Amino acid sequence: MPQTLPPVAVARLSRPSPLVQVMCVIGALALLSIPLSLAFSDHAIDSLGLASYLGVRGEVLAGPARARAVLVSVLSVSVGLFVLAQMWRLFARYRRGDVLGAGTARVFAAFAWGVVAMASMHVVGSALMSVALSWDNPPGQRELRIGIEWKDYLLFLLGAVLVAVARVMGRA
Image (cartoon, rainbow, N blue to C red; front, side, top):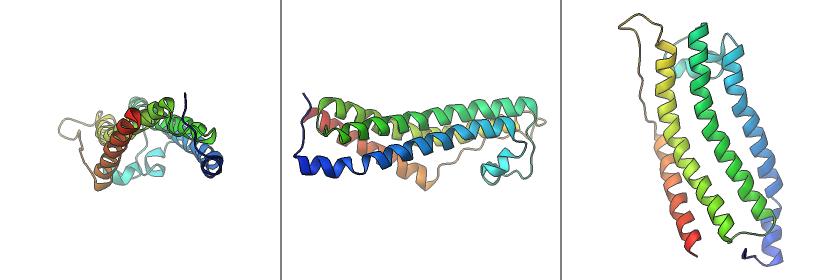
């Protein structure tokens, strides 16, 4: 049985819920545009900001490289879509006033693990993208770029904190 809050607290949680859900839809559309852009735009590497990260400029994706780039992007986008779906579900529960219920704790835990996966996938996805884009280069010019930025580390720590909160919620 979901534990509910007083009507005033439910109203406070309900007000931002539609906005958060609209933002989830906008985020999902933006994420879905990434593989589509890679698949159909000759200059997607530049427009998506991959050029500066990978150290390439004005590069046009050839057929096999394009297919690999789309595949790698689908992996990363899938994790992002999972996180947005969990956020949508979480705020739908908040909107109904179910803040402390077992179902909400499970959704919150899935969201928390999704944040951890997103931090990990950013590092792994960037490395895979560097391989995908340089695979057709001659031997000695193929690249595997592995980089962990402070924001990746911070996102991973945030995910770890959210996982800890989710465990406490699950036991409450």
